[in-house]
Length: 512
Image (cartoon, rainbow, N blue to C red; front, top):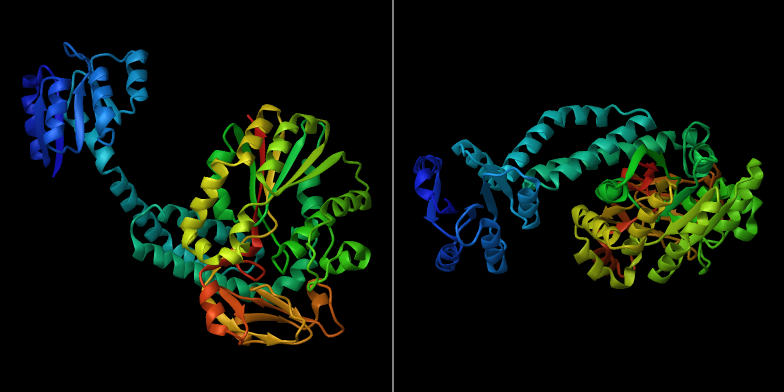
């Protein structure tokens, strides 16, 4: 039973209201002043406080200040005869949960109590009901998808429900959604295996290779400078969880998905974004900018040079600057000189953070505990962004009237099934794809690619091949299999074929 403490110097006038609340299952204790209330609260616990603003001696607001010093966790509803702005502002400033204006109807109190104590329950029930009503429609969409656009819509729908149901304390319902998502990834991998080569040949298919040509360059105009922010490894659900913070003061003009190429890694996808070329053509046209799989050097050291070559090849005279943020010092430096970037048509900002979570192999146990689920992974992203320099940069960019483009190079997926793989000594070390002279694996768990040029990928040897993990699979060698299988299970990896890795957010925002 919810216990109410009602503080009013004229409490006797509300006997009928108290009886009404008793009948509705609430227990009401009363007193006539703030100091008296403090003594009662010390002796007995209460779930909520009703307090009148206009009392002799200590007013309601003064009494609330005293109560908040020691009992700030108890929700308070203020009752007042005044609807003046000052009174309401005082109440809001004291973090009261609600305020009611006299003459008081008992149903007003009931609604306020319902809002405080049953709102979450009501919302949860409504969310579950809405998902149940949508379940079969989602299933039908998953089972009958036959275009990349339909798959993008399915992924958006699944992401929407994942965010909605993550706020509901019903594990069984969330598991049902997870099974739908798993089925979607299974069928999506089948779709990619059958259609990826054809998609790459379609100029209307926006991928890493033509993202700048199809989506970024058309946004460039003389009206406002563009700040293009590429957040490494940002998934669509992570974008949606930070969207309210990012878009504050902006109008979101475009919220779409585009497709990362395979493998869904920085070396391939991001280099293709900045070059406007497929990996096979980057190696052919710019061999000095292509880094071998087995080279220990960074795989994306020449993004600025590749972007410059792309603009030149397209015949675009675009005044731009490229920046990469690897640490807080870099972020602070960029923030301080952001005003100078207004002189450019385009400012490119590559921001690394999200990728760190999945790359932190040395601290894999700590990362697994920190990001133990997709919800936890999103929460980390939100907490990071809220306190990051990027948040300040984007707020400042609004003041400077920048148009903002936010995107990523690929996403990531939580892996939970170890798959045995073996091959030549010179085999790549990514957990979601492998390339070598020869590779052995269980066929149903991978997409096999014996002719890399079909996927516009370079061959590192005369007889190179690739495999890409489907669904939630990750690759482990037979040597020390159990140790590595346990180490990387339930970690976030990328490089393979999944909705989360391949379908990437592309957002355009204009300052209000």
